Image (cartoon, rainbow, N blue to C red; front, side):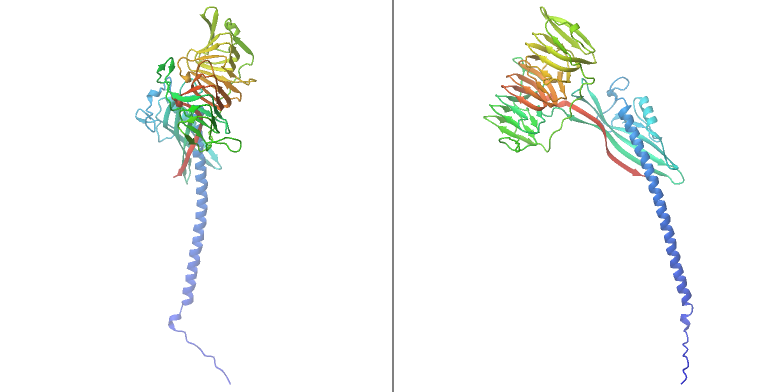
Amino acid sequence: MRFQPTLRRLTAGDDGIAMVLSLLFMLMLSALGTAMLVLSRSETLSSVNYRMMSQARFGAESAVHKAAHYLMNSYTLPGSGSDPLSGYDATQSPVLYSGQPVVMSAFSDVTGNYPVSAAQTAFASEAQGSLQAGEAEVLYSASATLLSMRTVVPYASAGTQVIQTWRLTGRGLVEGARQAEVEVSAVIERHIVPTFTYGLFAAYPYCDALYFSGGTTVDSYDSSNITLVNGLPQTTPSGGNVGTNGSLTQGGGAGVRGSLSTPRSGVGNCRSGAVTALDLNGNAVVDGGLVKLPQRVAFQAPDVPSPLPPTTTTTINGSTTCSGVPISSGTCTITYPTMGVGSVTLDPQGTNMALDNVNVTAGATLTLKAGTYFINSLKLVGNSKVLVASGPVILNFAGVDQGIPADFAGGAIINTTFIPGNFRVLYAGTGTLKLTGGTTTSAAVYAPNADAEVAGGAHYFGAIVAETIKLTGGVKVHVDRKLREFFGVGPQMMSVFTWKEY
């Protein structure tokens, strides 16, 4: 049997479908290829943009750092000569000069506004330049706007210090067929910390950091508003706030007419492994209660005298003349307030006077005029005296090879103004300071690594920061509330860093 093939006739609607499908596939492939090319180009451009923006940002950051370098190392703070503080309106932020914000600028589109043209010129010269980044040149420039300004009295200084906060703005620019520009902003400021937030503060974090006994009391007064009663400033039975990183031990009727601040907790027997905030014995009291600190308070030690004073010994008695008092600078004079008994008067005259181990004996008087004294040690014996003739007198003790660099127990400190800021004691070492000087002593002591002692029923007007503080024998401490205005000034720091691109 023969089979004949069956032929199927195509309908007219099927003609050319293969061609159409082929064209559609070609169109899809072309679109996909084009998309791949666009994506590849986009990735390339994105990489180029990222590289250029990074280069521009590095330039902007360089501008900020150059501006900061000028302000920290070359800039002269206002306050004297042709740049008086009275020329600024520091009640506004930004600070104003001639009704406009104080600005130093290296930008072509920002005009500087600073009262000293030389400062603006120097800033504009330093705060611009260029960097080479591969084949690209990065241009940078900066401006600085004065956000705030005030004056403070640093504890270790004889005068005021100007504290400023600046906003720095840096721009980085990469020029060419494609251009990139980035702006970076930062704030440079100097932090200040109150030196005497508390009338007495002991940095030691364990038991007996503060030790009060024998009827010791702590209250307060204000040296800027003194009323004398029986020759002594009238005090207030409050405001005698004390603090410690460890514990206060009180006994024998001791009373704090203020609060106790410490990171420790609880009232009870203080012992190793169970350090309480307050260890009370007898009828001792803390009127203002306990204030819980969130953490330990850290104190930066004062600067060690540089250069160090000599370690020889000088004895000052009633017959001592200036030839027997070796001084590095300033002047020495002799007066005779008492017949046959000389008084040695030292005057630094604006310089740092270096003194060795000074022993004042035999009823002699050492008179100190305002200035800074770099002294190794000072000891008073035989009813001798140190008289503060004018203030502030700043004694910065080196204490080399001296376990007790300051020993006032055998004499008297005479500061008739009862202004502790006129007699300031600085000590960075770890020895012991015996601060009782006669029936009254008026001083502001900052020695965060040392042990401080006040004893013998005396009055002490001022404040103390030390590692430990021991008050015995019915000492009456009167905290000067005015000392809260003293600050320590830290280094300049950069903060609040932001950036944006154009």
